[in-house]
Amino acid sequence: MPTREQVLRLLAAGLDYEAVGERLGVSPGQAYLTATGIPADGGDAVTAEQARRPGVLSGDTQELSHAPSGAPDARESVHRWLRQRARSDEQMRRAARNEARDGPS
Image 1: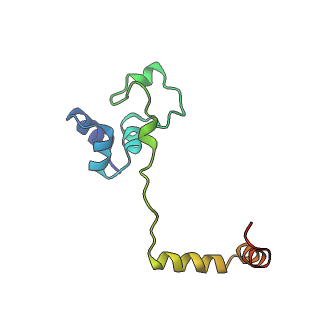
Image 2: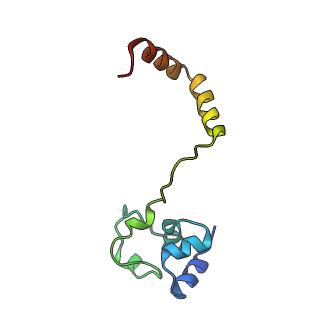
Image 3: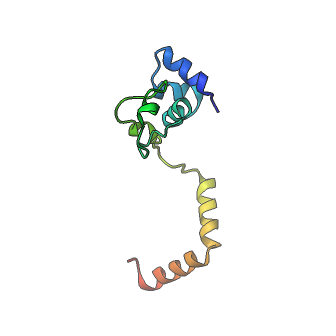
């Protein structure tokens, strides 16, 4: 986990939170929280005192909290694991039997 000082040093060097997060191996939102102590999701109202903290951005920070999206892993080992989990779950087995009997809904 990066330290507040590391994040603030990179910000002072001209990097933005996305670049800081990439450099330190954390999300931009985690870098923002580490630097400021304020969640980037916008869920908390920022007080005047908090707004003066180093690293606090004026305006919306919500975009920093979104995790990058990507395609799920389609390796055969993942599919095997999913099939095994479905077979071991009674509700899933019951749903499969009902679908086979009644057809897809």
